Length: 319
Image (cartoon, rainbow, N blue to C red; front, side, top):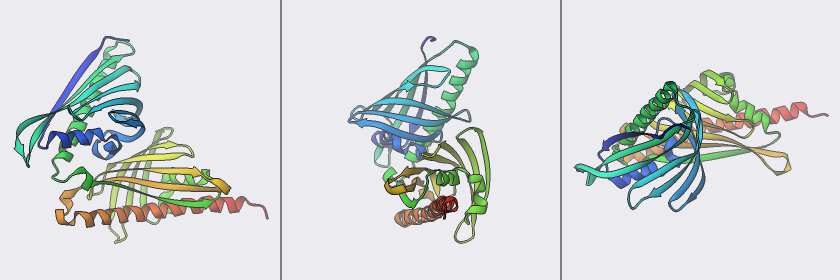
């Protein structure tokens, strides 16, 4: 293990410190707030303490680690420490600090955000040090810029961020339904709303996909996503290129065995709206419209996956 090193990144945001703190405090929303974050599983949560597993982009690749956090809302600080790091990192931790700064704006003071990191490396080498400093500069800068962008939108996070899910059950095996969702390269010939898919999977279970989707009114839009696949259990995804109405979209396909030979597939969405696309008075209706569009497409996929699983069971049955 090498000597301890540190890095600090900062930004000023025209929003009250508590509002900015709250965006960072809610790790479950990170996939739609922070560009590098793909998915977060909060494993423990109590007053002021939290543990989670996180999947995030690092230099174009998906990395996974576990962290614990101590949240102090009274002093507007969040301390974090990785419990399981990714090579070449031996240990990493740090602190978020939120302090009032600048002139009053929108009825509240501006905020200076400091993001501090300290770390050690498994082995000392110029290449490892250059890599981790590059990752910290890239991801910390991206996170702070995203935080500023979201905090300065003029609408609260609760107005812009929402989640919903839908579940379909069927009689049959789990694996065919999982394979249907996993094999997204075949979606253009299986799903009516998918016109084209480009898929790259250099690391097993880590998919990078580009998809062209056709809406109910015939208009088409393109998206790009990163997907992390756990066989016969779940597929989590985060859109990295979004349709015009959204600032963030992530989700989970979850596959569950039930009693009596039944299985279920659940599609869960986490969404952040772009309020610049609609007048403030129309935000609630805009939210319903976006949710309906996403639900329609995921429902089609859910039903097709379950039908494929049921069809496979019927084809394999003996008379």
